[in-house]
Length: 286
Image 1 (spheres, rainbow, N blue to C red):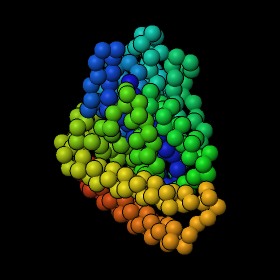
Image 2 (tube, rainbow, N blue to C red):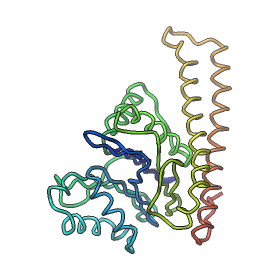
Image 3 (cartoon, helix red, strand yellow):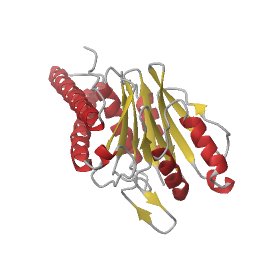
């Protein structure tokens, strides 16, 4: 089975995918199920052979955000038998007029892509776990403002961690990012990418090291948030000591430091990535 989670915000978009493939009797890991185009991200769930075919077609075709939907619908209609096509789900993030749109396609139900409302969506067997985690936080009054790409990465990592509770989702993650209208791919060392810029695929060991650094900071942010919530928990007894307030202030400073470090790490990776694929680096607006 599969898990893809996508987030779309004014500061950037992100899709995080696991790498597990499962049948009734076996499972594999290290499988790339997300394709990163020049200005779009697309994740597939469902029939493995169909996913492989669609990924290869995208890789060998001149597809961008303006025609990717038509391309995929046409491929499923003409290259894949209906029974197999109906076993596939497609999740798309694409750049459009200085924003990032979430789109989904369920061939078993619809004949075309549809808009996804809100800033979050997920597909695959891990989707119910991440959705419940987000709903639980909302009910508890935990509101996460998104001011930078670090916030997006931290939320995506937290939701992927929740999805890992599913027995058909693993922790070997592939990440697609969209920043300033451009796409970037990175992921776990244990994933074997077949599709993407050759200069990036050939340097996957370096890519995976940068991913590990980004993931580690996101995990530290999640841990710091948990610590902050513990320090605040005495409010249940209608009290909050000065010691608890001091601890909250210290942890809040640590949280901001981690976010700054994560923003810097992502920015440095984007600069390196642009150099590898031969495109000019677009610095973040000051």
